[in-house]
Image (cartoon, rainbow, N blue to C red; front, side, top):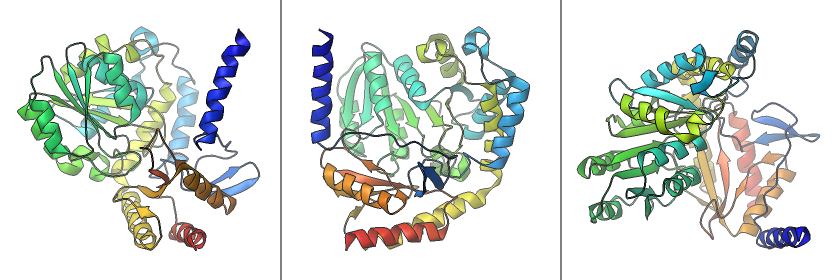
Length: 389
């Protein structure tokens, strides 16, 4: 029987490989950065979400090292048992004041953005309620909706007119609009001001997943600050392992929302807390995000430099002003081959294929960092021009 079970899995894996969809892990032999080591090769990496170069920043590393001495390396239990330490509490207060989605906001930290979104959607929506989701949302928002047992209604990407029609349709229960702020595979921004107006008109929550905007947009405060938005109906989720360079995530919202999550959100209640040493590292990271605006300015210049050089390439450069710069290749095989050709030349650029992106839209996802040099960007553009020729 076991052999039949494993044979079925093997057949599915073979079919996946035949479609050009097999994923592989490369093993880093160095710390995260723009120049990394894989095996015995040094590579110029455009694969990481470390947008401000904080993952191996000396001040952040020193904070984690000192905190490990004072707080150890494990939390020991969930936040509600005995794992909630003073650094966690201080970090939550700092994040709530920094992002400020509404007056007197509170914040709650999670071990990952995936857990945070599962907790949010499944707590704010349930049977008889409706979740309205952009079709290109991250998978964890959709998974949260499925876990909640609410009705999931997806609307075309950025289409506020279509969303308005869906919101106006007769439906009982609560309504929750869920959206990425910066879409992780396209790099474009959600129309958050229009979405907030719809939420106000139809008495809905607005859940904003700002995984790729926090630390970069709005002077580091994220997409809400970028658009100048604040409302008690906004529930904001930001991750701490991308621009912030460490690990984890947080939710900032009206105090009643946060207390509801503490009392009811299973992914929070039943998960061991992240180590206090990470909260201390994040305190140092947030100080850099607040005080070193030059990192964001440098990142913006690199984005503009890349886009100017990439327009002449034969692949479609999607309209993105963020650190995520997608080159649309088309077929799975072509995208994979292009990524492998770049790897052979010393560039690590991931090929993104279905189901992460829609069929026929396989692409290179080029992630820029403030830690890149102009020469790094120019070298990548030169390699892409050579491969295009």
